[in-house]
Image (cartoon, rainbow, N blue to C red; front, side, top):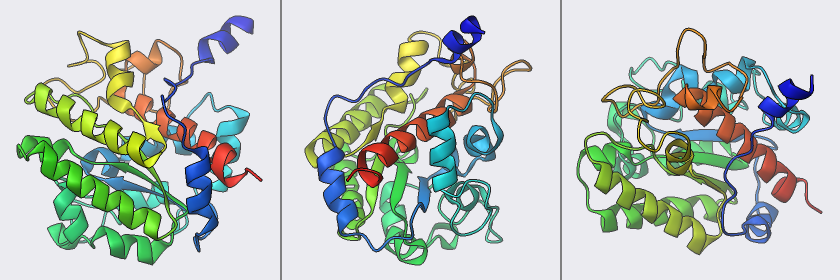
Length: 271
């Protein structure tokens, strides 16, 4: 029993800057529906495996369970951000909050596959928090880092202005544009630090586990999407050290739940 507990005792990389006080101030001005957490982004968020560990995985801690209950996981309605992210919308290629192939500037403007702009998404669902991962398609399009950073700041300003706590995530390594993706991730980290935001450093979590062989292990071979896993390791598997090196979607889903549990405790449950 001790060995099993030890194997499950994994912790994400601690972020280097504090966010609690700044985000408590944001939440204090919120008119959000309690516990509504949206997952906003591109196909890496729209993909069903992303939310599988949250919805039905093994190895949840008590804090994970409390956070998942708070965020209405498995309610399968408009209070459940995991459902909204994976829903197969009739317009095709998207859900309510995530869209395949979308760039950040397109998320702000709306229109891709009839996707509403970010402002409309926030207005519709009135979330307490948003997990934002976007930028992979901006890298593929070779957008300028400065333009991306400016758009990222706009997205963060929009969320904070509506009393929404932004939980931002770096993007995974890009097999076709590794240096540009690294520069985009530096921009995301800089915005997170400057604005005192909760940060999920997905890129660093991947590279800390697979510094030389992430392509084909935590990322699908030659692809910009995380891997689903193997016959033995799936997105619902227990988050052991070995499993977190074998399924990119397990790693991402676990990281999101862990950060949300942390934000719940540090921001929403704080006096």
